[in-house]
Length: 209
Image 1 (cartoon, rainbow, N blue to C red):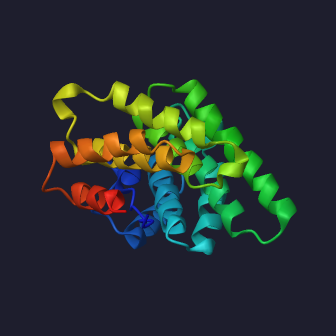
Image 2: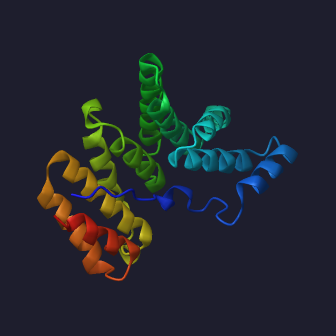
């Protein structure tokens, strides 16, 4: 089955979507003590890292590390954990890889433990854990995170693009585990609920033999 790279745009919902990274950086230089701007900049670096920018991963870790001590909402902790997993992805040194994996697990699990019903944090961990090799034993956690998001999602908004993407990711996770029936259920749900959406097009691709 064709492997699709899904852009998880939900990771930056609500964080200066219209503001360029250059503008954020300029504002942060001017307001170095502005925690919200620092968080937005850290998230922006993280998302650049998702696309393979190794330098941005390092910048994300450096910046987000300054925010975790008073992280009341848990987002800095979750993004820092995901950034460490991206660093592990890029690290050629097996000891560095293992160190960053363990740090990533620690921060992501801490964020979920302290904010178990925060949808965005569940999505961040689910997406991060789904993307690491199954040998590390985190796939079931990714599945449970996506399933929990579905449980928490308001019924009146169930066809929002976020929940459609979560259903796609849950289907991919179940397929990686070998549960094709479960995967097909969620992909067909996407097609049925939002047949004209980009997510439905992706679901159709995933359903092709």
